[in-house]
Image 1 (tube, rainbow, N blue to C red):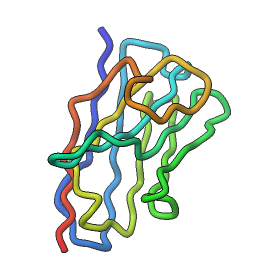
Image 2: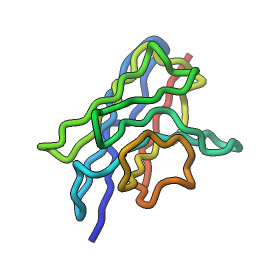
Image 3: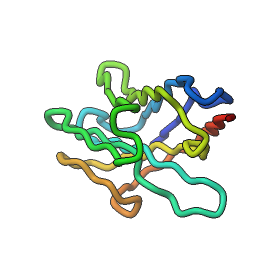
Length: 124
């Protein structure tokens, strides 16, 4: 059974940091591209960052470039999203998604497996 589980969300003041974790099971993690998405109330789900299975190529949305860093530890079947200099507009439910692929993918429809999400709230 495939499982994708996010953790690490919480409440933080503006300017603070959080590290999200995405841990997966039920498939060969090394072969999967992993993406982070977020969805704020009343808004569409948007791509935040992605790391490919091969070579570890990365993608960042313009809104998070220079503040967020994605990384993966295949030995732990885990991808991390380090979020620094958080802003109130980063408040959303953050989702992790997985797809067996080699390159980066930035749209939700490109992914097969999803976690349940973790809430990130940034207070001003």
